[in-house]
Every structure is written in structure tokens, then in C-alpha cells.
Length: 226
Ligand code: NI
Image (cartoon, rainbow, N blue to C red):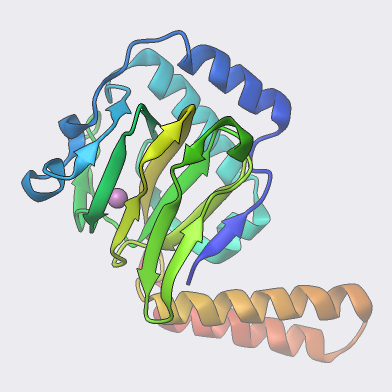
């Protein structure tokens, strides 16, 4: 399931991020690619040890932790420290799948990548091309979102970034391990949670609300890994 999270960052925050990102040193994106994806990866990236990347990454994680839709959709257990990339001058990233396990550089902790995230930091008017194309059983989905918005998608998906033929596409990307490993189970829990929220707004005193909430938590209890 693909989930868009609008306005993770405000326009002021995006402007601050871009100011810092436009004034720092970038390296070849092959640095964090596996052997196979290095063959198709053509972009620039901030080093994982870059103080700018670490500081902005921390701000992104804080924004994620206070975003109810993200929490409900991802049920995050461990979030990889966000990385940053830039595509310009024809850069692209061919079809690939993300590594299944990643080691967090500073702590050595390993995470299973259940969900992949792209947070857009350039507005769509700033560049041509650069769509993130994600394949699933329903076909190929093209994603190009306003700055400050992000997309969550299963890390099992094949995906690619089309060539950027004008301007620059700056984004943050990272992975997370969910408390609920299976995409279908997470989708069900999100649907149920959203439905409970809607009923709660329309009929806040309905006695069945607590029963539905109980079903939500008991399903989560069946499936959760902590
Ligand atoms: Ni990828």
C-alpha cells in the first residue's frame, strides 16, 4: 500500500532545510548502494556522517513522531536516520529493490526494512522528470509530491526515479522497521483506525466505539512484534 503523508514539514521548515542543503557538500550516491543498485544509481547524496544530514534527519524524525497519520500507517519500531539525495543534470535511479536489512551507522543496530520513505524537498515546479515510480500488483504508480509531503511504500516494491531533465530534485529518503511486519496487516489496521476516528468525530458517545477500539488493539496485539 502506498500512503501519502501531506505537510510533514511546513513551507518554512522546507525553506530552512533547503538553505542548509544547498550550502553543503554532496558526494556520489553510490556510497550507500549495494553492488547491483550501484550500477543503476546516478545521483548525489549527503554522507551519512554529515552534520547537516544528522541535524536535519533528527528534525524529520521529530516531525514523524508527532504526525498521527504516519504513526497509524507505519506503526514504526525503528527508523533509519534519514539520508538526503539530489538529482540534477539527467540523474536517475534505475529499477531496484532496497536492501532488506540495513545497519544504522552510528549505533551498529540492524533494522529490517519494511517501509521505504521519500520526503520531497523540492516543489514539482522546480524540476522536470524525477518521478518516483513504484510497482505493485496494481501496476506502476508515479509519485511527485509538493515539497514537505512524503510517501510511504512497502520496501518489497521494485521502484525507480526517472531522469531529472531540468532543475534539481532534492529529497530525504530512509527506511523503517514496523511493529507489524506484513503490509496487508498494517493496511487493515490503518483502515480500521481511520474508520474509528471518523465514527468518533461523528458520534463521540456511541457505546460501540470502545468495542471497535478494543478490536483494533486486540488485532494489533495479535500481530505486533516488540
Ligand atoms: Ni530505493
